[in-house]
Amino acid sequence: MKTNRQFSQRHEAQTERNLVAALLTQRTPEELRAFLKDLCTPAELQAMADRWAVVEYLQQNLPYREIHRITGVSVTTIGRVARYLATGAGGYALAVKRLENN
Image (cartoon, rainbow, N blue to C red; front, top):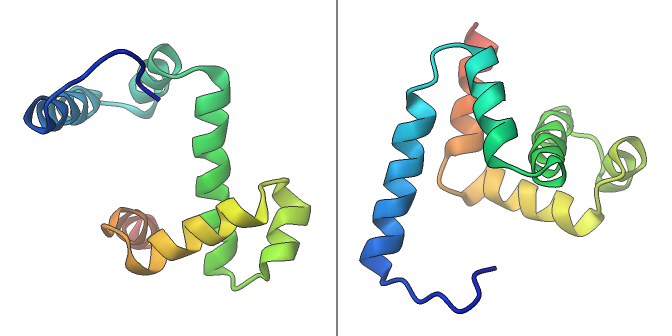
């Protein structure tokens, strides 16, 4: 994704922490939505929304082909989301759990 920029791993980690900190400053869903609209292209934001929709359908145990039919998301992406849901960093699972508890 990056072209002609060489950041050290330490610098990359710091920029990621800075982004996370900026996300955490948003206090309402409307503020976060505005921040994301400024940060992301419409296509990037739609891709994230699509992935989140895939998580919801995977939680319902729908087959990949059915999720693809409903969402238009590629079966490859659906598989990737499923893999991260099962064995990723835990972010998807935590969000699902917290939303279920609300």
